[in-house]
Length: 437
Image (cartoon, rainbow, N blue to C red; front, side):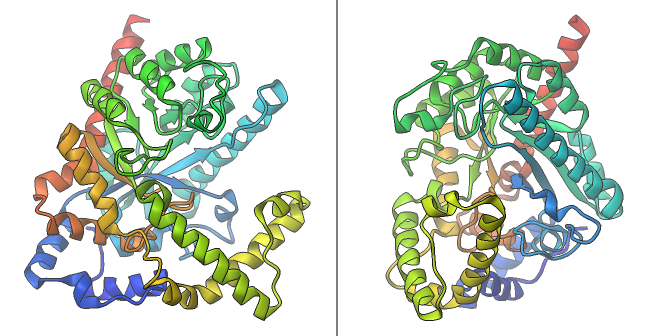
């Protein structure tokens, strides 16, 4: 059975992790409403479809059995009542040549191996890898956490489509055909920056990849490719697709979000949009202002402390070891002064919040229906908002949904039902295609 803290304790956790001074009464609201939300949160299966990983946190000495500074780990999942984490095999976009493909493939395998170690070596009694919706329900019922695998960027398959089947055998259940930068398979949303495109959608290899993903039961993820690539992929796919971590472009005009035309296509395809709690994709104005003022305050504090905050371009010029060392020091500095910075920002640059996030859920539910909307965070990949800034605060999303009048049945669909339905349909299509040869 899922374990999570009372609303008042959850409020204290939010204060601890976000560094924001929050009135507990504002968070908990009416006691009856909170109690109802707690029961719903305990009874439904909660799935977050996008959590990035660093393989440095999958070793004998340092791993997810510990409450690491990561936004997701087993203690935080248990604390917040997050049942299922889709751990991400992410590869940044590199050169489109054999050397690039080789490095990308090695990176992908390293991450598959890390997830394997977590579920089979470090914590087999606490978390198990699921391949089907039946697995999810069985593992959750047994009182364990659930891991699933998504592949962010199909770049590692190179030009060898047989790797799609191998990734499926390793446990991958969704994959995006590109990330930030055009891949050999698909244009990326980032083409909007300069209006330069490589394929005008999908490449011929990318079109074949969609068919292979359908055949081997991997959901097509449309969160990162270009709009044209997404339209082509949705039309080609014989099974429903998902956007594993995207929000509504009508509310936040970012190329990573989906406009109404794409939302409608996903609805007609039977797919699901997993709304993402990423500040810049939820409310760009709030996020940009806060980032700008945070940088200014950070520089001011750094000057007083004798710490030199570098511009991003200068950081990238550093040798890899120095860059890593600088990153560690900057993180420690930010952590030390986070309460001070948040207090100064509170009145002049309010943070993007759970309320802003659920606005996107509301919009998409009204636009395409409750059956086509889900929930994701992009934790440890840039995601997080005030109120849901790590897995321990997951209950706050359910609480806000209850506040807005969503029923338990609707909340169950948003948290897991819709996504698991898509998974079932994708796997049904795969079986049919495999029989047909």
